[in-house]
Image (tube, rainbow, N blue to C red; front, side, top):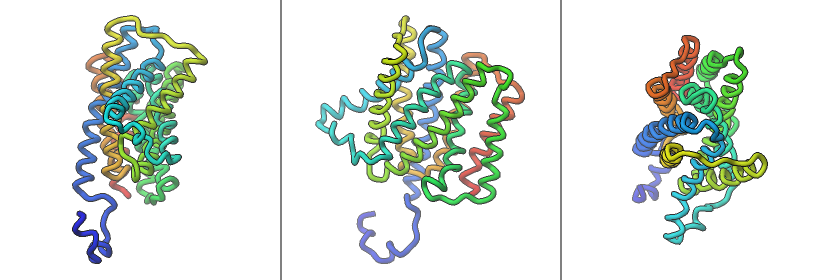
Length: 304
């Protein structure tokens, strides 16, 4: 509170970096983001059913482009476009690079193995956040945290289908997306201290559009061929943009590890959509793997 900042007692008393109300608000933001992310994942997979020849790169491009337009058009109208560049610190550019690459990989994984399984593998980002926290944010992990990290990766190993190279490639892409997402989240935690959520998302979109342009110049592109595909692309773009906004707000308002644990609701919902809408029922080993990832991933922040 502004009135308290000049009082010596307020300076000397140890306090959390973020006040509790902000932490609670951050968790609410992440819950909203989880619902929207699950809708995005289900929509991305459904597009492949209506338009089997549409490459995942086009889906991820429309997702980023929609986010870019939703962000920049109001800023341009309000004369705030230059303000979106923020302080242009390296962590903003790295957030864009890690995040947009992770998005491309995750959509490619969804096309190969479905929204449920791919979402759980990508959700390993929460485990990677704890694994990399000591290096990037200077956090310390207890012995129990390291044991939980091992338990989570044990669950990841149960999801891998080593007998099917098609599934194995998709699973590897989803896991790599999880690692890159963790790096992006950690960059959000650093860049967000002096930049608005709009600036953080702007760099994600800016770098993402550039990466897709390079990809299309090298490998070509293909536009959707049906009304249903365009409608689902709109759903993916809008839901993904909303999820990105609320996720960024969540990581700025609450501790990164706590927010990442709440983020495990997204793969649970994605798995539910996968079963209800696409009748993709995981096998027993895969279910055990997802349970291990979920349990240890949610426990991680509370073991520190």
